[in-house]
Length: 333
Image 1 (cartoon, rainbow, N blue to C red):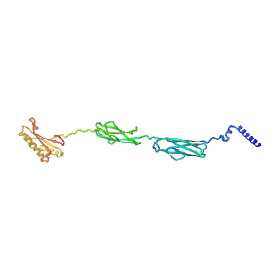
Image 2: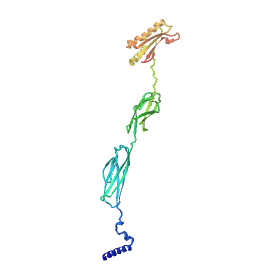
Image 3: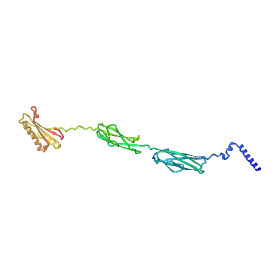
Image 4: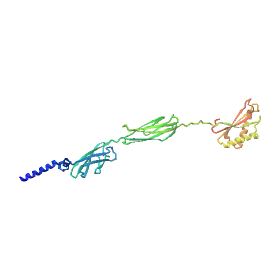
């Protein structure tokens, strides 16, 4: 009984001492009821939070954990989609095989005293947008008016859809369909024309391309036919058909030209006046004298033609003149 009273007395003294102590002194006393509770928190994130279906890009999942006692921590990861790669505070997520949808990544953190915390982050697999690419080339960039200009389109669809081609032009007429067409330039003037191609996938996706063609208008010069021309005129003495030296000199020049231009011919056109004796026979004799001289000097008879005529009453000296007409190749006479 005496021992119990003494113990109670000691407790009373302690209480009295605490009562007399100030607030600051009380806070320093490490009683169990004054300790802060142990806290372990975790926060998760995934970057990027969205990825296209089939993308080979890796996502990064990360946990930020805080332990109020500074204990060493261990991490565990799980996911309802994708392949997790790595360990620790940060891992990678391979979502390349996932279908379109929203997925979760869960991280658990634990200290040596089995205190645990969990967090969840989400990522989304987006439907891959369709991408159409297209380019055009002109197989014949320069054509003459009336010719066909060819065009070719190269197009691709990222989702493999079948493409439909449409073509437009600011001149001429498009011929054909599909990735290869031609432009009919009939009736077009000289200048540059634009052809536009479009590829459509039937689901609203489309791409355009442009190519040009230059049309030339060729001006065809009229064909000028060679014309006959007189190259010699021999005036005979009245009632005569003999050649003098000056007349033979003219015929030598005719022979030289025949040698140089082997495809040409000549026409001997001989006349006689009505006042001369036997004018028809005289005109023929004059033509024969010239033809025979040329033949003796080597002129081919196939290149010589002879025309004989009668002069008029008022012809004067022209009635006694023999003309040699030069007939170039192609000349009409």
